[in-house]
Image (cartoon, rainbow over all chains, first blue to last red; front, top):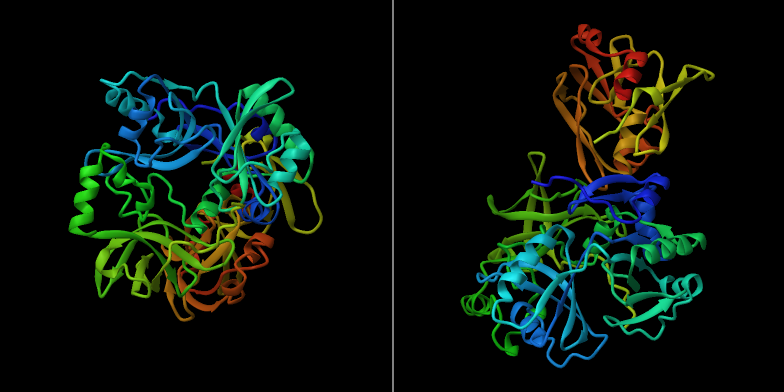
Length: 365
Length: 157
């Protein structure tokens, strides 16, 4: 399917640091530099630095930009001021998720969509198709935009100290544009780890300098995508391809709060309204197992001797040590406290339905 | 998964019967994978240490270095019959589960229970912490396993 793998502007630095490198979303990305557990704990207790330049950036500009974003995006951007960021999804007409994304509001004629690397081409095709009849331009800005995620309780002070960028004033899910040594950058208080943290966007040249400056402090741990996944999983954040897909609706994924049915029509709205009326047949839940065997993506979930769904993501939680997973299962078994089992290497491991969040978020709001 | 090249393989003389082989386990990171002389090795990275008719079976240092943080070891039960080239348990790292493939056939006479509470012992010293002790039912099978030197060549391929 994929022809050649792309590399981010920091690839040589990952190799230099001895990273284990693997394909992810069409890119050769660092999975870990030392080991997932220490990198995970660095983010939970201090500060971790991720290269997330693989993420896609799509810019929507033009007179109809606001109306267009309202038409394709589940959250409500109407009247949103400069600096506001909203999480939501692009839906297909069946209510399934084309992609989940962040929308950065620059003005009502200029929006930046931050999309999953693996979906960049699909999203561009989808948006371009839907743009028919709107006075908008859909531009792929992924190539010229690099991105770092600086995550953890010490992120704020380390960014200020290492990069001279003040970010204490940034509220959760807002951004600002500024410059560092003459180079333009955008910084937001966002992330995918459940900790306070920031994402910094800029040119490859700037991002390379920022990477070096942050690591030079010796207080920032380079972190790979391995722990990015264990971190997001523990706090119940979805990953496209696991908890979300073209076949899974936001309601099933438990993300209904990001779908604003009262904002007017948008692609997929009818399907979501219908699903709400009829009631859900299945739902993404958390499951905690009694034993230590680890539930993995795709393993079957059983209740009363029947298969009722499958695991979407599972780990031994790095922070709590428990064997836990998120799973998409029949609504009838989705009540918290329901006894269910996960089939792991032929044996049924008993467990119970829980919240999807296995570790509390520590956002600074 | 691995990018290994034979020319980077170097054998260091060291004390005792432990030889260290320098093997690039990551893209360019040289990690010393320990290989012990006198043990037998399988292509699925288990080792066998025999004492008469009894064999200690574990995973190699190379295997643990490739797995990363080991967080769970699924052990068979004492008295279980295990068969060469068949699964007898699993080792799970943070990211993935790997089956344990038995290099020998026989009865499990002891399991290393310490691994139940501290699976990370495999990362600390995979050769020190064997996984099962097996009473061999067909010692002839040992002839099909690799020597230390052959295993070193095998992982360098």
